[in-house]
Every structure is written in structure tokens, then in C-alpha cells.
Length: 267
Image (cartoon, rainbow, N blue to C red):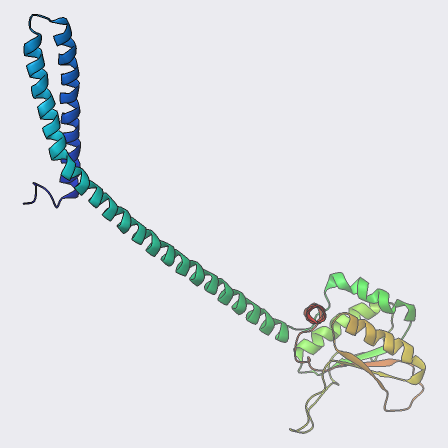
């Protein structure tokens, strides 16, 4: 037959503590009564009898406490097992959360990288004000070189970049004659099967090829696609004709330089 409160962990714990506490009190009373019996010679028999009763009660309390103690250990082991299972579940959940967080961070980084890649592929070519002096130094040895610059009149990006180049060339003390224009001439598509010219094309007479090559190297060095071509017409003018065509596909400027450096590092 089950003892009272046998299936209640709280009752079992309380009962075990109460029985153990009572047993300790009666054992303590036994010790005190033995001491009194030792000094109270005339009544030592009485105190010894009372002490024996206390001893019997203490033993009885221990007997009742014993099964409650085992039952309490059972509930404790059961609780520890439950806590261990909960801890294992918590670790598993925490590991999954950390994995999910890592996946989200990776996804966010990938999305940011993809967004940056798209932005760099379409970002307009510009030569920042703080870069003008640095750019001018690379071609300043050809100070006095005359040039004409043009861009397609409907290409806003090309016209803005042409304006940046005019500022840089003026900083290098290059000279443009009165017929200088930004807009008007430029790249056009003459056939649906013919792709448009891209980048910066420098048309040069042979006598000014060094200046044209230096300008192309400077533009490429700053990450802007550029090439030199012999001027297809003959005249005595020594000016360069700089044609700003539509923006090339892919990164330009500092973004292109960074991509090139990263590609070299990965090899």
C-alpha cells in the first residue's frame, strides 16, 4: 500500500524532512536525558526510561523517513533527467538559432555584395574633385596640348564624365580651341546588329601619339576604359579628339581597380 502523498514530490520532500527532523530532535532528547540520568542518581531510572522512549520514537521516525527518502531520491533523479533533457533541447534549439542567425548573416552579406555589384556595374563614371590634381599630374608634361572632347548629346552620363575630363585636362594645362564642345558628336548605333562604341576613344595624329597614349594610360590607370586610335582624316591640326562613348558594361573607376586587384589576389 502506498504511503500518504506517495505520488506528490512536494509532499514526499516535506514528509522526509519532517520525519528526519523529528528523529534528530528525539535523538537529541535521548542524549540530554542520558546526561541528566547520570547526574540525577535517585531518578536515573525514570530518565533512562524516558530516554528509551525517545530512542524508540527516533528510530520509528527514521523507519518512516527511509521510504520517503528513497522516494525523494527517485523524484530528484527524475527531475534531474527532465532538466538534462530540457538542457539538451535548449542546446539543440540554441545551436539551430545560431545556425539560422549565421545563415541570415550570410544571406544579408550575399545580398549586400550582390547589391553593391549591381550598383558598381551601373554607377556613372565620375572623376572626383579630389582626384583631378592627381590625374593632371600624370599628363602635365604635355602641357599646351590642344584637344577637342565630345559626347553623345543624349548621353547624360557621358556628358558629365566629359565635363570632368575637361576640368582635369585644364588642370594639366592642356588647351581646347574655341570649337570645343561637350555634346553633339559621339557614339551612335548605325545598325541593330552593331553594338555601340564604349569607353573613351582618343583620335590622334601620329605627331601627338605620345600625348594620346599618356592620356589613355592615365584614364585606364584610374579605372576608366580607354584606347587610342589613329585619326581617320588628314589635316595639319595637332589636337587630339577625345570621344566619350557610352559607359562600358561592368565596374568603372575605383570599383574596377578594386575588382582587378581582388582577381589578382585570388590567383
